Image 1 (tube, rainbow, N blue to C red):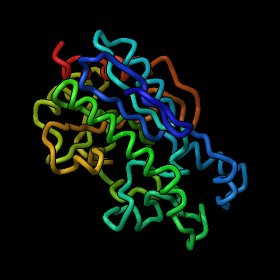
Image 2 (tube, one colour; image 1 turned 30 degrees about the horizontal axis):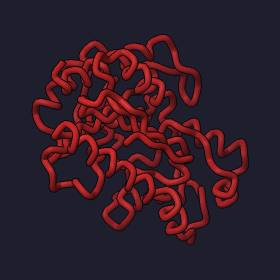
Image 3 (cartoon, one colour; image 1 turned 60 degrees about the vertical axis):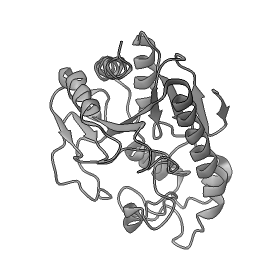
Image 4 (cartoon, rainbow, N blue to C red; image 1 turned 30 degrees about the vertical axis):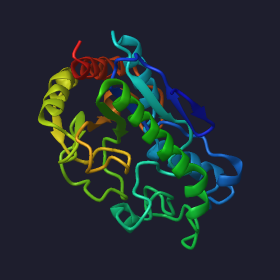
Length: 266
């Protein structure tokens, strides 16, 4: 069932749509008590938010939903990823721990201090990460029950120039990066994405970012859950860093709508 909490919103789509547009990194909001644990001053924090936020991706997903004949569902994070990053593994499996960017970040995009190194991540994980994960799990389960499948399309963006925190920033940085998972990204989903985003320019696979988000309850277990990450290079639709969207935002929104339609089969 559609529902929301202060930290996220699950926005209803068509009953027969298997598609969930997942938007985890678009927001900049940080609750005051969480802000108190961040060591950056206000100006530095705003700069960090400019770099780390996937600005306007919620707008892209909203426009795509409005353009779609069969409306996809949307799961949107309302808080900055500097609160928690809902797409990280909450344990030692997370490779970004090596740069202080596990589920709770302790370092910035430029590898400077964001929180004290000894910060205990558990309170934030309990308060924000787990409820988000549980709600996303329920959303996927609802699509499986109703339509027999669930297709998670993760909507992200990335900067034109690599930032110091990136572990794989030396590869291609095309207008569209498609992140895949060997278990959850079937060839037909990838082919549909390549076709849908062709009007946006060149695409590359898993460069500069790879993988696709699936709730842990289904991850590596249930082939009825498919997933793809769409990374849109920011200069193609907005003013970097952290600036306004341009009229070109309609291009990835239209492509995302086309992909959702292809996946739905309409």
